[in-house]
Structures are given as C-alpha cells and as structure tokens.
Image 1 (cartoon, rainbow, N blue to C red):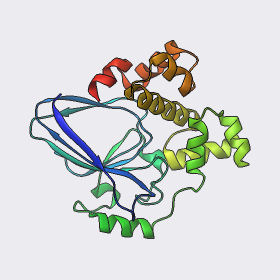
Image 2 (cartoon, helix red, strand yellow; image 1 turned 135 degrees about the vertical axis):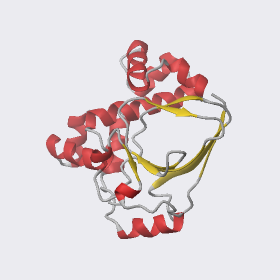
Image 3 (cartoon, helix red, strand yellow; image 1 turned 60 degrees about the horizontal axis):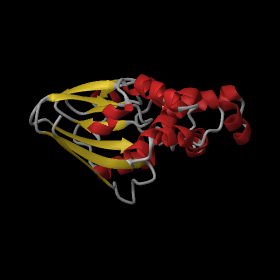
Length: 220
C-alpha cells in the first residue's frame, strides 16, 4: 500500500513518556496490518480521535486514498493515569476520546499539563520491560525486583496491558523485527532475540503479526 509515514520527537517536556509523534498520509486504498508493540497511541483519523490500546495480535486497518492519520505514541508502560483507566482495560480496544474524557482538539501543551496532573507510571515498568526483553524469565524478573510472581503480574497488566509472559513475547518480537529490518540474517536474529531457533522465530512472528517476517520487511 502506497503511503507516506513519518515520526518525530515529541520534545523534551514529553520525551520521558511519549515515544514519538507520527503521521501517515495514504496515497491509495489498501489494508495495513498494525502489529503489537506494547504501546498505546492517541490517534486522529477518518473515524475520529480515538485511543488504540495495547494489542496482542495483528489489527488490519482499511485505509482509503486521501486518508490522513496523526498520532501520539506512548512508551510501553508510560501511560500512567492519563486516561483514568489501567492499560489492561484498553487491551485490544479502540476507544473514542469522548468515552475517555479527552477533548478532540487535544494539543501537546494540554497533554503535557494533563500528564503533570495525572498519576505517574509505575516506576518499575522500564526495568520490567528491559529485563523481559533481555531474556530474563518472569520468575527471575520478579525475584530481582523483590516481587512475587502474582504481584508482578498485577503490575504488568496495569502498566502495559499485558501479563509478563505476553509482554515478553511482544518485546522479543519487536527486538527481532528491529534487527531484521537492519539487515541481520534471520538465524542471527533468532539467537540474539532469545528464540530457540529460526523456526521458533518464524512461528512467533506469524502468530503475532499474521504474516511471515518477509511480509513485515516488505511493508517497512
């Protein structure tokens, strides 16, 4: 599908919570597959402003020529109390701004002010994501943080929208996708991302994205 996609920095006032600002302008009709990335996005598009919660599988988005999308992508686990609900309640959901008490014309300045006034993210969230991305087991992460596995589960669902095991699968998948897009051979991608072998990588990529890795690389 022919479209123009761009990302840029949100600026210093939002950089600790927001991964990027982005836009996509569609030149022709087609379907884009959105894959899980552990992020929550605020999106302005043809269907109106809405929040895209953390996905657990591929989401096909039908786009038409001339459609314009703009978005604000939060870092994994960085949503905090902005929307008044934990990330787990937004999992695999698309919810209108109105239903979450956000104004349709939300500006970056207003967003920064709302973030200052809302509950801050779980301070352990970055460490949880980093440890799971590096290949630590859920048991090891809980132990290293001084938590029970049940407590870790509750905090992960509230912060990321995922159980620790699901979060681990998604951050591992995103690491593999990043390496593959940089030209690393798939056998090396599998080893460096913590998969048993290349077949395991292929199975997980298909399960999370609905297409083989080659399809994701072509779409990049």
